[in-house]
Each structure stands twice: as structure tokens, then as C-alpha cells.
Image (cartoon, rainbow, N blue to C red):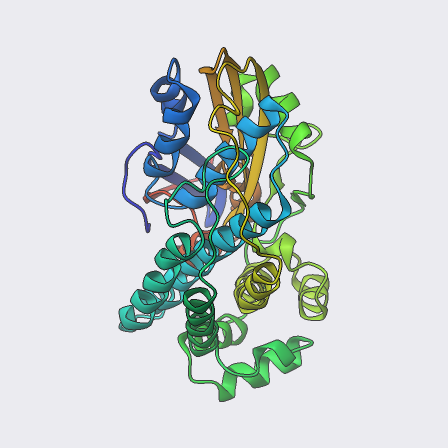
Length: 394
């Protein structure tokens, strides 16, 4: 719905309605293993420079996950300052991704005009983060590139991002503790985000799409390495102990008072998912500030740190949509195998949160609109197509 078709592919949903009930949901994805074919045989340095450019969305997280996978294969542990700098880049990308939803997608769902101005301002500041940290743009270099923080430029960017986030979400959101607070805030706040929350609550859609699908926990990179290396199919149909799982803002925000209250009433339905995105976005500027306090100028890693390496390893990174993991196998410094699993494969699994949240629900005139809301709440990173088919029962 919000990405160009490319190496990422597309996603199609066929919703089967029988006797006014959603009887089946079938997913068809054109996402494949194109990245493996494109990177196989390349020197590792070439592969790392290429990975961020292959993805129209989340390119920074993809690049960091790739760098971390190479570091795991080579036994390299980056200095703390490099880890903090990468965290700033990842969190900035998450801000921009969330901001796209609030400024462009959510107004569309509300049949309102988008607000591209505030989004463009955020994107400019986020795109400037890399240069303010790594002037040589070598942040994907294993072990770390030439980190030279520009404190003034970084501080200016973080100030603007914090102000823009508050303008998008609405003042006072951080003080909300439960559903009643959320309802009052949504009625008095003039942002699109508040109006969407208010409509979901007023139209009795708070629990729509809820399911018993587990949240993906904070698993170590080794867990992903074991599964991606052993089973090529894990990249397209991942599982957690034999079952599907959901990843994203809902899990990251799970421990906050508001999310404890909302999930206790509505599980992983629409209201908790949309509210979790606001909780996640509202907290990102402070997390970026915390990471900035850990920065210091450090020497770059040796230029031959991964040259000639034979081994394998996995690396992961958070995105606005959830956890991303890459696994790489190297032979004398060249890529032999490359696999990755993205949030899409978790959240839009054939037995996952989207499918299980719809099957069995009544299909009335408002179903398509609620389906669009559920897709937006889970936020696929590829273009989506929805087809609804009605049949009479046996």
C-alpha cells in the first residue's frame, strides 16, 4: 500500500466470504530470495554497500542487519560508540516510517488530505543523520566506519525531529495511562492520529482483528542464525516453536501502562495496534537522545577486517514494522549464501495475525473498510492488493 514494487515484491489478499462470514483468507506474496541471487559471489564489501540500496523502505535497518551479520561471521565486536551511532540511524528511520503513516496513510484512511510538509521536514533531518555521524557514509563497514559526530548538526536534527513527532501525534499523549485517558485525549486533540483513534473507539472496532498469535520475543541473533542457516524456507514462512508470531510496535510497547490496559481489554486488535504505534513513535526522540550521549569520535576499523574471512553469522535490527534479521555465509571474503526474514513474513504469515484475525468474523458492508484498517495497523512494507469473493454456503 505504501511501497514501490521491486526486490521487495507485492502482497495479495483473497478474502473468501461464505454466508456473510469470512471463511478463508489466502495470501499470495511475490517476495522471494532475490537478494540471495544478487549478492552470491560478491566480495563482502560490495555486498554491504549494495544491501541498503536494494530496498525502497528500511534501507538503513537492512544495511545495519547486514553489517552485524558480517561482524558475527568474522567475530568482530564494534565499539560502543559505533553501536550508539547505528542505533541513532535505525531509530531515525523508524521515525520517518511512522511519520509516513501518520502524515500520509492515516489521513487516507480518514478520507482527509495528507500532510506532506511535516513528513518532508522529518525526512530531511533523518537523511542528514548519516552525514552528521559518518561523513564518509561508511556506516555499514564491519566494525565501524570513520565516526566523526557533528554535535551541532546532530542536536539540531534531534530537536526538529522531537518537535515534528509531537506535532504529528498530539500534545499530552505521553501522559495517557488507560483507555479512558485515551478517549479524552482523542476528543480534545486535533491531529489525524487522535481522530483515527477516536473513530476506532467510537465505531466499536477496538478489538477488530484480534487473535491468539504470540508476540515475537526479543530473541538473540544466534536464534535467527540457527534457523536461517538450516532451513531456506524460514525466510518466507518463519515460525516460533512451530507457530506464527507477530512483531512490531505492539511488542515493543507492551510494558507501558497504556498498552497493558488496552491489550487487557482488546488483545491485539485495532486499537492496541494503532495506539502502540503512537507509543513507539512518541518514545523514539528520547531514545535517540540517549544514544547520542554515548557518542564519541573513534578510529575506523582496519580496512581488511573481513577480507578473506570464511564463516557465517546473523545480525538483526528493529524497523517500525518489527524485527528484521539477515544471515550470511562467507568463503574467503565472498558471499556464498544470503538469507533474510522481514516483519512482513511474520505478520502476514499464511497462519499469522492477519489471517487469524479475520477468519470467522461477520462480513457486513463495513468489512472492507475494517480490513483496510487492519492492513494499515500491521503496515506491510510492500504494495498490497485486496480481493473479496462471496459465495453461497453448501
